[in-house]
Amino acid sequence: MADIKNRDLTLADCRFDWVFHGYDSAFEGEATFSDIDGIVHVNGHFLLVEHKSMQRSDRIPTLPKGQLGVYSALSQLPNVTCLLVAGDMQRSIPYYIETIPSDGRGIDLREIDDMAARKILKAILENWYETAAK
Image 1 (cartoon, rainbow, N blue to C red):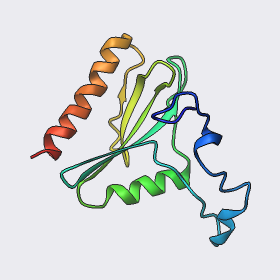
Image 2: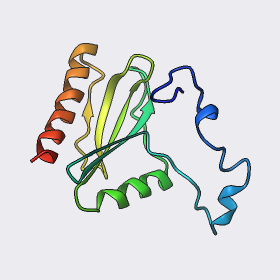
Image 3: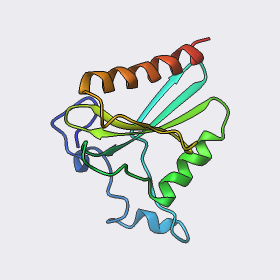
Image 4: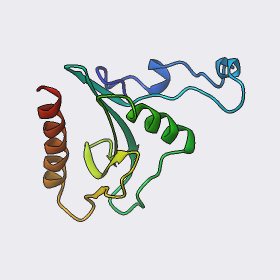
């Protein structure tokens, strides 16, 4: 996994290993660090994106309980939208898009061609931006 601005970096190059070095032991219970894969701020509105890797033939991924809890709690804040975008990370092709928490109406893009899937994701982002920019 590369850093968003430097595609040569690995995940280990651009973030702490919170668990290995025991930083998460500062919290009682099962609390630990989580990351947000993408965030956009426009005019007081926030779009948070969690990416999951999947291929066209894979089952739709689910978020781990803790990660789902983080995004669900954040989505309750004013002007915060959270999305799960699962797909081919190397080619940036979405195969599944869902609002977090799920309303049960995720968009399964596995049966359409790559360009159409990208256009649908772009349209969702543009729609969010139109709302946020008002």
